[in-house]
Length: 528
Image (tube, rainbow, N blue to C red; front, side):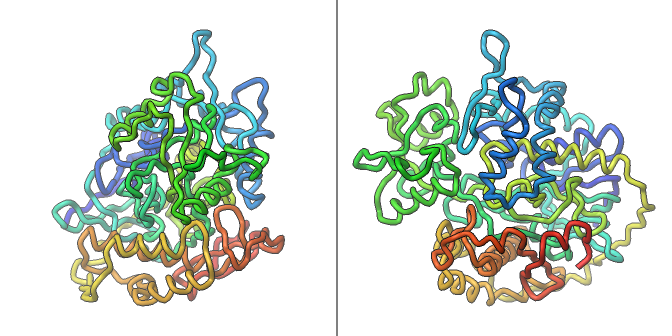
């Protein structure tokens, strides 16, 4: 068995993980572990941009209010203030790393506007390929001084005396590999692949959330899953993401009979918060009606949106006609592994950053282009924390022993079966009956979901286990929250309830499923 030790192990290779690796590598030994190629992440697919207050006519308070409003006032105000205040500083830091943001002939930033932003504050790099530009630049830097172990699948965290000390993995030859470090960082992204139509990379299956849950760390807000309103669709299947920036430049949502979909539906019209727009489109699609983005008002569309143009061409969609067929798709999980602003989880030695983490900055519904900002801001906070942390002496124990890994003989469902359950019963619009039907299905696999036992499974089977775990947590959390707020909409509780503003649905394997506690009870106490 191969064993590696380091100061820091980062699981995942998206923007947050890469940024943390870059900043930490000057002070610590770092190893990145990623389940596929390092280039495979949601960050690489991010078209929109990165929100930051850099214009003289803008103010961090405005960005703060936009974020809070989009999050349906469920956000952590302290974490959100930190996020928006750090925007301009982190843009400078990215530019110092060699990233070039789009500017006009006068050398000023070209600022875009997206849904629920009251001002133009979205920076882009490479037009509609911002995520790719940022991630590629960081990959080229990180490769020079950080070992990257690709095609290594993290299957469980190693916990000793209530502290996370390592990660158990299997490599591409299905051999067990163990990694030990003083600091274990989850940067594995979200869980979009739990749904049939998603903007997420094929590798994004909720792995980090499942790992943390089995290790005993606490998760929160798992019921809040954002659906992006405008996924390109071909033959009723997702074919890629159409950036919200397209609507920011003037595109309109129209029905197949040419009517404006969002007219009189929200004060911001086509640029209303994502949950509002997604539900309006969902209603039409569920009635077997088609919805389109009308891009005929956008001049030089191909030049402004090369990524969207290429997606359409690959799907056989002729953008010359000016209509792009769209439907909502799973996009972003606001919930995740509960952390403070420095990435610390409820389990000593374990940290989480990026979409896998729940810092509270997104509330019940993420504001457009705040995800890339979140990734770099909290990677920076994490790096500073680890650099200045009082070091404990690491005494790795070679546990679990390979001989202690048990066989699991019961048949597992397929990815398609899990996706069908989540899409049909735990999607954009939820009902008690549908959620209970999904829960009854997940109950069949509860022993596997809630067991801390190490099982001898293939990489594919471990992925299924993780998808089952996160699907179960989302479903159970959605049953717990008896209101509608942001991305969580229940027809049996269609209104928001003031009482739920101070309640959070937490998930812990140490308890019998999800449970609720006051947010105030949690702020200063990480012990259940």
